[in-house]
Length: 156
Image (cartoon, rainbow, N blue to C red):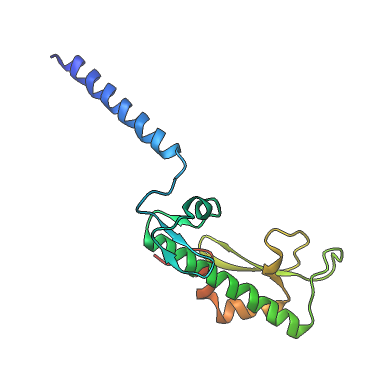
C-alpha cells in the first residue's frame, strides 16, 4: 500500500467515525436500565414503572449524581422564589406590569456572576424572580450561593 492509499484509508475511517459520533450526539437521550429518576418528593430512584412519565417531565437522568444535582437545583430555586416573595410581602410590594414607572428588580446571571437589574419594563425572566430592591438585595447579600446552585453554576 502506498502513502496515498494509506492516507485515503485513514481519511475514510475518520470520516465514518465522525459521522457515527455526530449521529449519536444528535439522538435525544432516552432512559435506560441504569438511569436515575427524581420523584416529586425529591427522592432519587433507580428503577420505576413510570420511567417514561419521569422522562417526559424532565425527571430522568443518566447518573445518580445528575439526579441529585437536579434536586439540589430545584430546592434552591424554590427557596429563592419563596424568599423573594417573603420580602415582597413584608414590604407590601407587588409588580404592576402596566406601570412603567414602578421600579422592578430581578436577578439573573451572566458569566457565572449574579446580576441585580433595576427598572425592568419587560419580563425577561420568570415573574417570581422579580421583586422590590430589598428582596433582590437580600438574595444577593445572604443567599448568593443558593442562587448559584439554583442556576446550576459552580465555581469550578
